Amino acid sequence: QNRLPSASKGVTSPPKKGFLPQVGDRIRIPKLGNTAEVIGPVTSDGELVVRLGLMKVTVQLAEIESLSGEKAEPIMVKAKPVAPPPPEPKPVEVRTSQNTIDIRGQRVADAEVILENAIASARGPLWIIHGHGTGKLRHGVQVFLTSHPNVERFEFAEQYDGGSWRNLALLPKLRFLRH
Image (cartoon, rainbow, N blue to C red; front, side, top):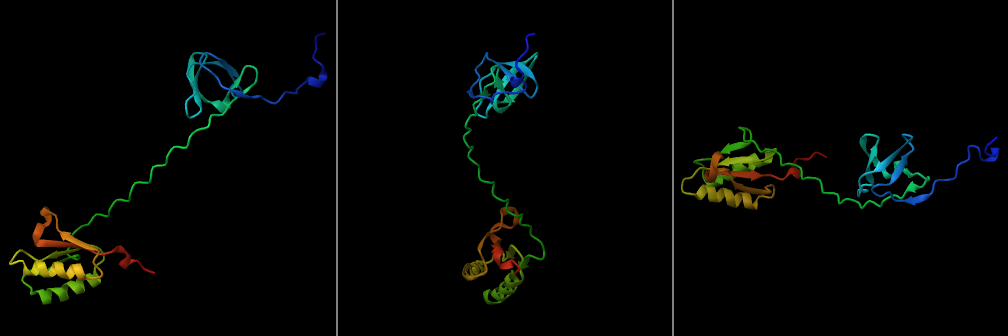
């Protein structure tokens, strides 16, 4: 009649904390109800590799305890620096007949009126074809665009899109937001 006293039946002591498994230690995995051997050091993420029978298994420290019932000591994981989100890609600027104005052969004063009307109705970038000529029209267009309050910036078009005989005027996006 080797029985335990009935008072201790089903009563367990609270698990002790402070156990840090080392390579070669035997541990218990209560969730699986098995014991395993530690075969790798604890990582900075609080994981370790154990041999469970013939398998190698990665387990969290919170999932294991020592054979004597000590819970594993949690590792303070340093917060990884959060990389800033990548910038939103710039919208593709596509030249169409609706956003392109051709002022070749115009006088600067006449071209300014055409440009003013085009900028007032534009909904994005505006391609301005002024041609080569003497350069007076190009200069007049650039002076006009520089002083216009609705033009954010302007630049020559890409070489494949006309280069120095075209300007690309970029209008601010805020102007087109609806209230």
